Image (cartoon, rainbow, N blue to C red; front, side, top):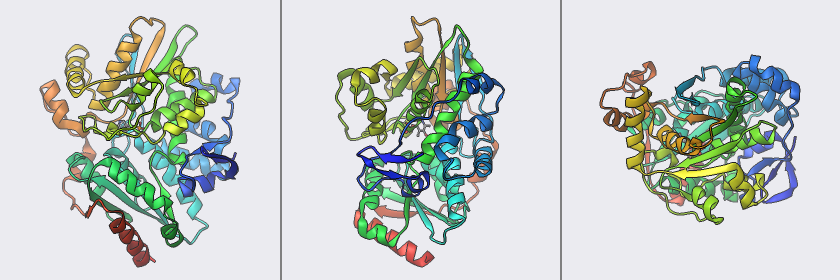
Amino acid sequence: MKFYSTKNKKKAYSFREAVIKGLPEDNGLFMPERFPQLSESFFEEIKELSIAEIAYRVILPYVSEDIPEADLKLICDKAFNFEVPLVNVKKDFYSMELYHGPTMAFKDFGARFMAGCLGYFSKDSDKEVNILAATSGDTGGAVAAGFYKTPGVSVTILYPKGKVSELQERQLTTLGENISAVEIDGTFDDCQKLVKKAFLDEELNARVNLSSANSINVARLLPQSVYYFYAWSRLASEDRKIAFAVPSGNFGNITGGLFAKMMGLKVENFIAATNLNKIVPDYLKQGQFMPKPSIQTVSNAMDVGNPSNFDRLMSIFNKNWQLARQVVKGYYYTDEETLEAIGHVYRKYGYILDPHGAVGYKALTTYMDGRPSVTGVLLETAHPIKFADHVEESIGKKLEEPEGIKDLYSRNIDKIPMKNSYDKFKEYLIEKATVEG
Ligand SMILES: *Cc1c(COP(=O)(O)O)cnc(C)c1O
């Protein structure tokens, strides 16, 4: 399988090249040349397969020229080695909890899979790979944990000062080893711009071997299509259609779902659920894509004013707005509605949502009204404990602390504070690469 830039269909890249590069030179995004079609027998057998086995079957056609089958199996077993409960919240409504990995967010799947791929690729290379990732909260922790101590890989994470939770900051800044955290005096969009600029800087790229671990990397994207197959295999039947609600920011997770659909998975609709950063719901409504500065909300992993996967959505739908809005339904909610939903769901059903999941809950509930033959699956993207303040206030009681958390608070924080300046950032990257040599 070859990969192409969304901006240039002529130049082909291998999976390996696409993963290591992260972004094509032309500032587009990598897309597969086609979507492999899964066989009917796959959809019959899938009910018996574990999620790691599903991952292996779904991802193999994209990577088979670059990763031997046995290695891919190992990578999938490692990336998909925690449980994915499908919790029945209310009638025909399931919460797929994607947060049982090491950093308690769905991004663990993508980060762990990508780390596995880069670990495999770096086996026969003596050049160190420098991963850059901007985070609005969860990406950074997942990438840091996923790549921690991966040989041949050094990681730099940028995060906006004062705009991630204390827990998230600790997940970024307490590992050390091959992980560095840079605290930018600016917004998440500023962080993302610095990273984008670094990738387009020819002089820098000649000196430092840069790669991206943001949701724009294809190795992050492919594993994010796997759990859609998994949920379908456990919940679909002759007379039940499946719709997925996806709390969205950069729209990588929902793009993973659309990949699954393009490979043959029968999905009635995808629900794009956002907070007031409603760029995509607005696009679906009006047909115009209008990026804006991001607005800070309680579901901060979705505070994105210029969703980085939008070009991929356009590529999947051939820039056809009518088609896009047939498949993807957009909804957005305020902080007040989000927090109210957390309290409501807890009191009525005894289930605890995090703020991102709560946005998705509201969207899916609205969508399902009047669609009795649809089973709804909410992608619960983060553990409620990651947003303990808001959640505890909404449900009126303390949350239980999962094990891994207590340990985080006993470690030292190590971060590099930096102005929002590309020159400073570049200087830092060159210095770091020189020191590590
Ligand atoms: C990253 C994140 C999202 C948004 O995912 P995208 O792939 O960027 O759309 C939603 N919820 C949580 C908890 C996240 O960490």
